Length: 567
Image 1: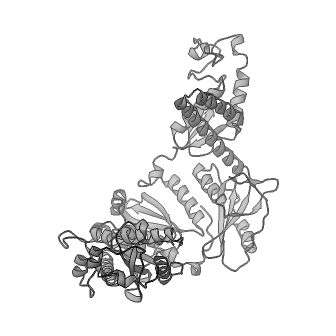
Image 2: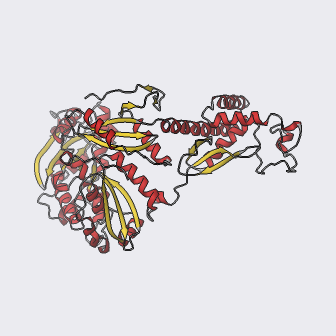
Image 3: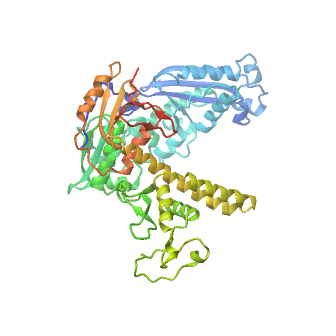
């Protein structure tokens, strides 16, 4: 079991536990334009309403000078003429003022809402590009899309704003004027939120992913989330026979588990899983990395039915050498690192990539490619490769076998992590083929070379990190504290959180005392690669490393050991 550091409960934010709709700020916007395409940025009017908790907290309205004459038919539709925009601010000024009103850079993290959002958001983004304004990339909700998912066809004849405003009895009817239409859209948004609330959707994630009503059978299972912690960690669904069904991880266990019983969960296999579930266990973790590691280990140990990853835990493929008198290349499928006495490259994500790497090795060496096991009593006729001088035929006796040991040595050199000579030869062959305009043949060799280099690179990184007895590293978390982890021979050993404003060094000392004496082997390759990804994410900082060892960053920059964390 992983050691669990005491989590800092008071440090959780709304982002950690899911964002309730009642605490979400929505900026509902509507635009009127002079026609044309968004790239023209011909906006004539911007209207917006900011709402939170069902209450209006601000409104915004301005005309804009579109820079082009307003067509007559647009004036008839909207009532906006060239006279209205004659003294109006430019589109650039108006868009900047709207973005300031919306407060997308504030801590509220507002959500942008529009009816048929591709139109309104398209014009806003085009204006930002045209006038060199930073687009804040806010989350966007489209009330047209929501209405299609939430309202039945027998309830409303279409999803036009006027139809929906009338259905939800909006106090303001849409008039093709920006602020009126934005006000009408607010009523539609609130009406749709009320509808999904009755279906168990109460947070922003659930609203964004809503895809239809949840079955009553699923909704009745909501009691399974009772008592679960609103903390980061791993959760496990079990059926009535105590068999594990599904393992997952989340920054808030309770919020995530609750989502399985709402319409936000749309995966058919999860619907089946929830209907079988009878209990949910929670394992609180100090950091997100610890949670991800624990999830990997539990999936490998429990093999839950509904985790795709548990179906083929040995799917990773390695290229290695057989153990026989005249070795040959072989594919090995296993989820753990090969034995230290066995040279191999990988892991490859599929057999096709591994075979490409094998063919690359065959292309630069005379290693035998036949499948037979050759012994002193073997009687085999040489294959065509012998006639092509691509194999020295160790199946023959006598002088023809001289030199096979040297070939094996060359291949082992590649499998131990140095493919530079092989890549150089392959590149030379590619250049020759390109010169002869044999581009398809050159592409085949290119793919083989890339597969070989990828396998060598991945195995070299794995060997390096697993050779280091202890690495302690830290990452500044979103709350301003430090997520500190101990890695032993590539395996996650312990994790702890240093709260914001506190000296992290005492926490490093405490972390060392938490490291178990027997970490346990073998190590899952997926775990090591997860650790490597964290170490090489560009923001993780090295704190301490075992004497005599260095850590080589994935971009080939050596990181100095014993670098102290500083705020």
